[in-house]
Length: 179
Image (cartoon, rainbow, N blue to C red; front, top):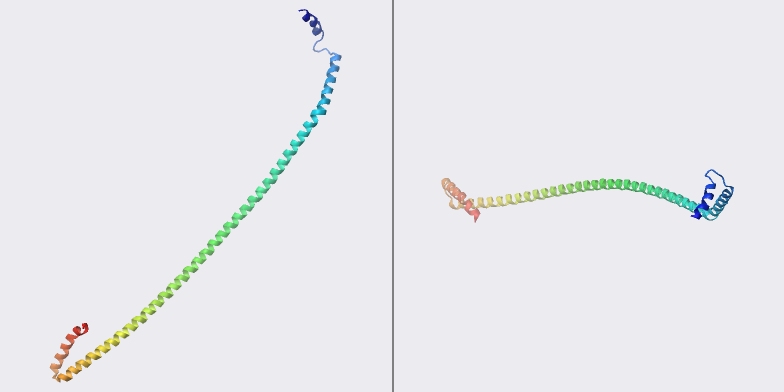
């Protein structure tokens, strides 16, 4: 307990508002030493680190601005390219439509020409067949007339008999034709 009694008068001697010149002097010296040590060892690296950080941030901002400008330029190029591609596609579709229309007209004209040629050929063949049929008919009629005249001359019959003979011959005609 004796140790507490000796400290008690020292602690009780100074108040909170009392100024102690020795303590003030040592506090000032300690503060100046602390400022010197911080200035020598801490402020330089801290300031250097802040400057580097500021430079890094500034570079990052500049890089981001450049990249954004590049991205905007590329976007504009892509939009222009898309517009060109759409215009080219429309032009190609228009040309294809024109080519299809021209081909359709050509094929239609060719089909009409071929149809006209077929009709002309068919008409010629029909005309030739009709001519052949008429020639055959004339030849058969001539043969029939000669044969009928020959029978009439052979028979040298009267008019009534001649008529009966011609009618009989005409009645036999379908049978002769089939043979």
